[in-house]
Length: 422
View 1: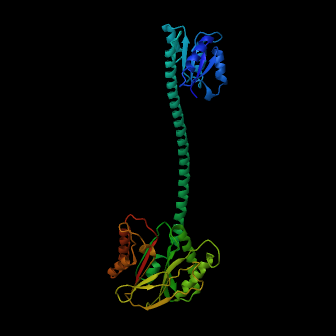
View 2 (view 1 turned 90 degrees about the vertical axis):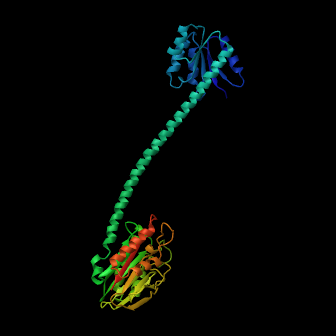
View 3 (view 1 turned 60 degrees about the vertical axis):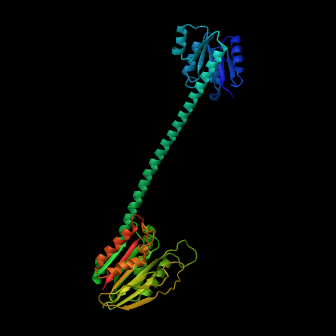
């Protein structure tokens, strides 16, 4: 549909002539609305929905009941109507009247009567094009304002969400830091291991504030026991499993005859499996751990070892390290039989004997440059090459080698390596 044009004139002849000219422009498709005076025009405007208001008004100045001058004052004072362009049609064509109409009354153009048909159509077309452009600009400005308003609302909501998230993160971080203190508190005192192994190191680096790697040491019978474990996962889940494993370790240690390290692992397996209800059908969890257990008799002449997915690296004669593999089955998992037996190995040892345990966090760490794992071979090369150094220096060499290998690559897992020299 074309533009709507209102013709306001008390002369029926003028209205007919204007209608005839406007509807004669077929390609424009103008729709013409007629009003006989200003009052009639305003009444039509009042009852016309916003979307159907005229796009332009041709307004006679000299009319009975309400003049064009009075009518335009109403039109230009209304916020919805004021954007509709108005062309005055009048016989008052002197300069003073033209200035009054354009500057004081706010009409948009002026046509003296009698008007030229071509000039009227040209002025109507120009004002309609200008109005269309202004309407589009207003629409774009309105849409932009709406978009900006939505953006402001979204920003405000994002700010609220960010603040809530920051609060939640702070609470979580605080909780995890507290959990870290709890986890560290269950680790054995640093001087306890030193009482039995003067030359040793413990490299324990959780990937996060808490981790799934755990170690225990304690006197057991007449000898001394050291255990390194790697629980399922890392972070908070791993830490939870490590707490369960700690309880299982303490109970199993009291129930098993000192020195029977294979039986110790078996009993821990049963206790963890039962605690997590993984000894029966159904259930959601399937968690557990791998571990290595070393026991040195009081006279330090015999080392007893058993492993669950762990290897012991041992040098009896000061030469290169040998790998003593543990039983492949982990502890606690649903797939591990409740009566699983863990092989036990005994070795005659003497002063100078070295032995090491490591979780898979170091061995499996991917390097930045070659995108390959650090590997067992690389670790053994470092330990064999530097076996004569004090254990604390070996620890630094292993740690620096890992950091160099890792580069900017993200840490994959907790890292735990322990070494002892009799």
